[in-house]
Length: 455
Image (cartoon, rainbow, N blue to C red; front, side, top):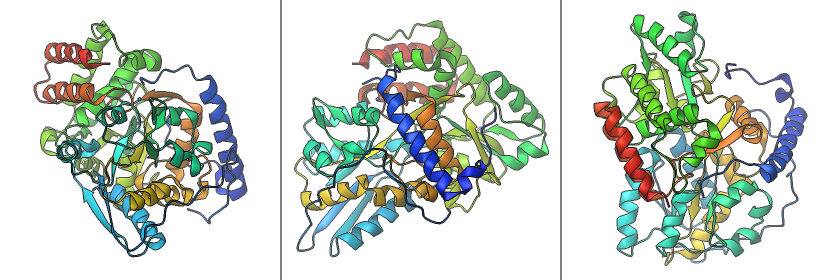
């Protein structure tokens, strides 16, 4: 089934939207309570929706007094992500007049560059007040290094524990404490495609791996780049590969790959590497010099037909004035139908933060309904809260909200949900070399060696 479609009629009715949204999130809590999937310990007019669980009245975060500063560290510099971050900054300034926001961003998708800068700052005793961190295993490295303050009491005082899915709460809980405040949920395994190219060539978005190569061959014969891939941000090929692994292994065995003692000698690893090699052979030859957003732009410009990227690409397309369902469409990555590969962006409180009161006011905003409803429609992500105002979310995001509540879940390794930072680095290095040499033997061996860092 091709998942590019317009919303059903009931989505155009605010009351219908409200009922659908509430029902789906009620189902979500039931799904999470029986979920067997193991995550490696990874607009219309506004309408009022009701929370799925009655949240405790939030305790107002300490109000910063006497002016001051707030330094927020992230890697959100592209299109929709920057727009979303600025939307939250605007609200913060209204709520906390006189506070100067220092927007400490470091360009580079998935935080590949930002994390290096952050590590240096933290080791040098110069932390920002709050920084972006993926929920899941990525979070634990900062905790183990003693660089974050626990937020359990703050989190519960704000009532966030009452309005976020249990599985997400698991991903920010470590050693019995909550360490960060999720601001969103992203889907990473999305195929984005140029609708005009597909229509003009009588093609259907590929549902399976075999479908992908059939479509790619037809596009290449017409002189069209089948698959746009970046490489400059150092996460694009690793990102592509995780969706291939998911297609080959299925959600249950995929999740086991990132647990201690995982068997990377499984012949399916080589099968996945062979598929990824073939897919890259249908991509742009200049991929090493392009970032993920550049690759997305190739699709928007009609120079390439498809790209496989997280739904921050949706935020990027929106920021460029493109319209979903008109200029570009979406589907699950080939072989990933029915599985939602997920990650969550969150913010924590630095130990020794220069401005802790200002930082807590920021965290209160990040977890609030107002903050998330301002941020996510621009970012291209869905809210971490279950009581968001669904009328503010477009066709794709309403689809994604439903999918998160009904499809099987799989954790992203590239984006910190499935495995610790040390492993993510080794995994990323192996796949980035592979992006250049396409040496299947070498990448399989490198991935087997990397598995030693799964703890």
